[in-house]
Every structure is written in C-alpha cells, then in structure tokens.
Amino acid sequence: MAPDRPLDYPLMNAGKVVTREGRLVMPIAFTVSHAFVDGAHIGQLFQKIEMILKELAQ
Image (cartoon, rainbow, N blue to C red):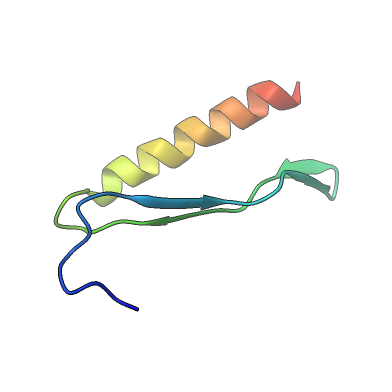
C-alpha cells in the first residue's frame, strides 16, 4: 500500500550474503522519496556498501 505522502525516511531491505560464481553477493533494496534524497547520495551509499563488503571478503 502506497503512503498518502512521500516517505521522509528511507526503507532498506537486505538479503542473505551468499557465494555466487565465486563472488560474495548480497541483495539490497532501498525505497526513498526523491523529495528527501538525491540519486547521487544513493549511488555513494551503494559504493560504500560495496567497498565494505569487498573488505570483509578478503
């Protein structure tokens, strides 16, 4: 069900970390309102998450 107004907080869902084709993968989904968050910031967040996961995999 969609809210009547834009979300003023982000929603995040993360799945289980698994090995797929020799690489660690983890599904992540975000729901944000563009009125509160710019797409560039989401891109930066995903880059940071990817960097952290790569460090953990070593």
